[in-house]
Amino acid sequence: MASTWSNLGIRLMATGENDGTWGAQTNDNWNRMEDASDGIATVAVSGAVSLTFTTEPTSYADENGRNKVLVFTGSAGSTQNITFPNIEKTYFVLNDSNSILTLKAGTAAQTVTLPAGKDMAIYVDGSDEVHNALANLQTTTLAASGNITASSSSGSQPFINIENTNNGATAGSLKFINDRGAAGVDGDLSGTITFFADDSDQNNQEFARIEGKAVDATSGSEEGGLDFYVAEVDGTVTKGMAIAGHASGDGDVTVDITTHDGSSGGLKLGGTLVTSTATELNLLDGQTALFTTGKAIAMAIVFG
Image (tube, rainbow, N blue to C red):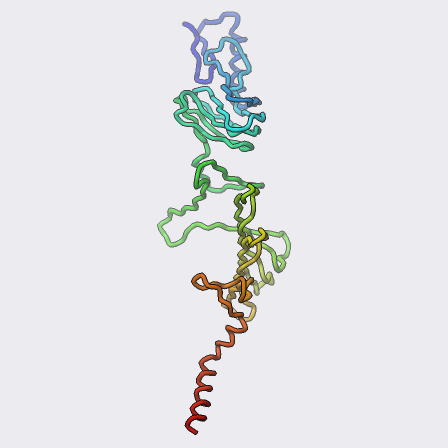
């Protein structure tokens, strides 16, 4: 009986076969398994790449398509196709090139796009499809000591869902924590959300920001604040509104339109700028009383 080969190209020798060479064949098999389980290969990308993989090898060869970790390098630019062996196998792929890589296998029934500078865990299903192995990752706790980036070349993506399937009134939350490891200080930021987009010169510009902060960090008298910033005429990101706890009364909160000047910026109602200043608006508090008093004086003059 002749040898057969596994999905990973491991030679399965028949009983009594390869007399005198069984040890060498076994060593070749172990080398192939080592490559498949933890081997690392660097692949230069100067154009389209087809990874090497022999399905029925009779001797050992260091083939990049058999390795577990693939590091792609090069400066070809644009989008390049990377064809994987059409076998059932998982890979860790690191794109250290400046190209966008389209990862495919066989007839490319399904492909995966890997941007430059990004890494991905993928699997080939052996039926012409490549899949992002972590595309629908589910976990109880995800911890990271550095940055987490979600990237996509598709429109309206990426998006992040926070879903609670419990039959109750509560829901998920997004929590920012500033843990100094020491006493908190007035003005400490607790979290920031920033909004960036390209300007007309394709500079990635900050257009808006939301900051949560500790206005008063005194234990037992804590006051929080939420500040809203937007880029104004010269691109400077300026605070336009501040919501904060009020020190003078429990349960009081202030909303401050910080740029309101009554002439060029500040509060608008129905799209129309309120041109009165806060001082002028405060005078209106007594308008009814002033009108009543004035009316009485006028009637006294007319009717004696």
